[in-house]
Image (tube, rainbow, N blue to C red; front, top):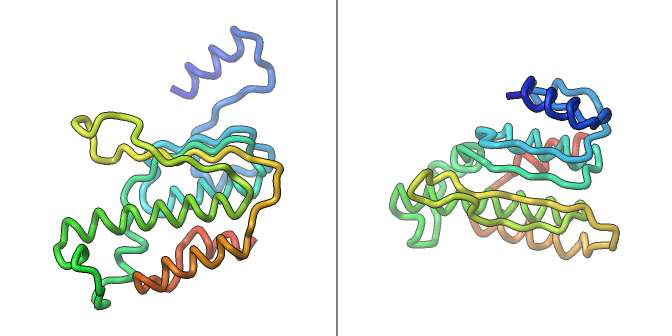
Length: 169
């Protein structure tokens, strides 16, 4: 697929457009205009989002997959919400919480963020797409920090991996 896309880019005369397939943490450039990560499993989604945020990408498109990091962290913790009593509902709820935290973190880093279904649920349950478009206007970072903190406290989440790796940057 990468070879095909690079061939098309060359034939169309796009000299500065190239496609690469490798582990995101090994990709060394800080100049990424558009970052696309499709079905990046578990924290690979966060690694991709971090790479896009740190390189100040104009557009980040990500379809998260397995959401294990937060679910593993809250395992065994008493949850007040009856929505979290049953296994399958707990799994779905924490997928939403994980992706909501991701969207809020994107917004905190000046991205206008949209979350939507990109394919019919009959084809795959993993059909959520996060899209962040870089914006120049200042955002209320403290307000977003409060929302993130509140959500984490409500569900007994100690840390979100994306926050942790961005803090190390």
